[in-house]
Each structure stands twice: as structure tokens, then as C-alpha cells.
Image 1 (cartoon, rainbow, N blue to C red):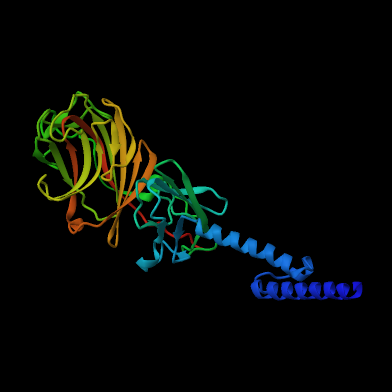
Image 2: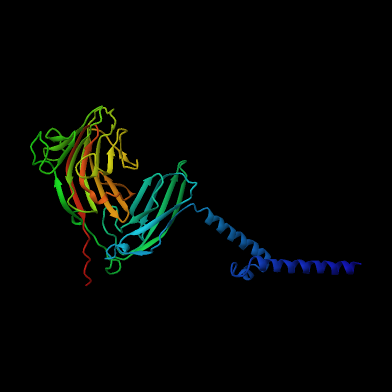
Length: 384
């Protein structure tokens, strides 16, 4: 009797082990779990561990709710082929995430942040990088990386990071193109309003529209004069001034801006603004850039707050305007501090926006040291 029970026990053990090995080999084949027989003689145990790890990896992939896709892994800002001059980054954000703000950090191989692109609300489908840093200086050849940060409405943060692309300018490896701001920009025109008579409109260069204004010597940023434009207080009659750009994009707009402290209550109660206009009438289409709003914030057309402002205080506004295919790329600096870049679909009138517009929706606004500059493509250093 004992002998039969012993044989039956051995038979049950043999069948169990055989089934375990067969199950392990079938469920967890060798390619997915290499070297299992070296670390774990028991195939079933190792298969369970390996399969658990694989499942965790799959779960981790599913939980990646934000990411950036970059179709091209190499680009060249100095290439004669326009399609190779910029790098497009495509955003992928889970539809359940309500985006409060987002940010893309572009880093060099030493993990130094060279460019920051950010915005509020849902980001565009894609953004472009031209290979330059926040000061407009072309970066050196090499590999670049990204970090994509998204914050939702309850301040939960999602991140994605990885390799962005390699940049090749055509020079020797690791060639650095170093330029000062003055060397990198050609001045198209500038106006400090010093050559005009006080109390008159600077009509030799500027076109007055709607409420208009005049040159004043009571308030100025530099020299002894500035341009004062006024908007009707409590009404609906803003003041505008236009001057022809005389160049094509990309270009920079720099303006010193000061706002009065009047109480505004009209139908458009904001203060100073900067725009591009088709023609020289407020009735024509325009590309708005910024507005000093009634709530004390400087905002973009999307409503993005660049910073808060104080009345009776001068602010240096710098705007870069670029057109790339069907997109308009606008970058902002306030008092020489980079504030971000936004992308808009190009308007059907985009090529007709040939006049710089300074406006004052309501109250008093002063403008000084206006200038238009154009970024210059640097010359490649000669190889010795």
C-alpha cells in the first residue's frame, strides 16, 4: 500500500513539473525573457517575474499622457533648402488633460537650457525651433534635447523628455557662431521723435488715425521728446499712429511704452497696444501683438499674461515676428526678459500687414525709441 502511494506521489510531482515547464515556455518564450535559465533554474518562477516586469513596462507606456514627436532628427538653419531650416515639434497631449500652461525647454549636450518656448492654455499642434537661443544667437553644431512640461487645471504636472535632434550648420564639428546683439541685427529704421516739433503730429514719417496725438516734451524716455497718443476716456474713440515697416519678416519691433493712470470705462478700456496693420486705417485688418490691459497685465492676443505693469512707468517691449509657411511665430521680451513664443495660423492678409501700428485704446499713452531691426544670417567661419 505504501509502495503504491509513493509511486502515485512521484507521478503527480512529475506531471506538475512537466506542466509548469511547458506553461512557462509557452507563456514566456525565450526572446522576451533571455537568460532565465541561468539566473532562475525554475522556468515557471522566472517567467512569472519576467512577465510581471513586461506588464509594468506596458503600463508605464500607457501612462505617458504627454509627449513630443519629432519626425526629423537632423536640421540645418543655414541650409539653402527652407524645409530643412527649422525643426518642427509635434505635441501629443491626452484629451482628458485640461491644460493650464505648458513649456518646452531645449537643452544642449551639457543640459544647459538654450531656448524656452511656453504658453497658457491648450498649446498649438506644433511649434518650430530655428536653432537659436533666447537672444537670437545661432547655436553650435551638436545634439540637442527637450523637456516638455504640462500643468493641468489642478496644478498636476506631466513631463516628457528625450533626444530632440542634431543640428548641422555646415561648419566644422562643434563650430560656435558667436554674435553680439548689435552684430546680429540690421537696423531698418529708428525714431526717437527728437526731430519733430512739439505739439504737432510727426507727419513726415507717421500717419495719424482716429483720435491721434502729438509730439510732447513733457514726458520722454530718452532725449527730450516722445510721441503721445490718446484715446477718448469713457468713449469708443481710440488713437492710432502708423509707419511703414520697410522690410519683410522675420524682423524685430522695439518700442518704449508708458501708460497714463486715468480711470478707463469706455467700450474698449485697455491702454497702449502694438500691432501690424494693412494700410493706415483702424477699419483695416490687423495682426495684433500685445495690449496693456485694463486689469494691469500685458497680454498677447491669446490672453497670455506676459507680465504685470504699472501706470506712469516705462516698459521696453521687443517683439519678433516670423512667418513660416502657414504659421506666424511671435516671440516676446519685456525689459529684455524673454517671456515666451506663440504660434498663430497665418492670415489671408499676412503679406499686406506692412505698417507698424501704435495705439492707445483709452487715456494717455507715450511711445519712444521705436525701431525695426532685421536678424542677419551669420557668416560661417572659414576652416583653417
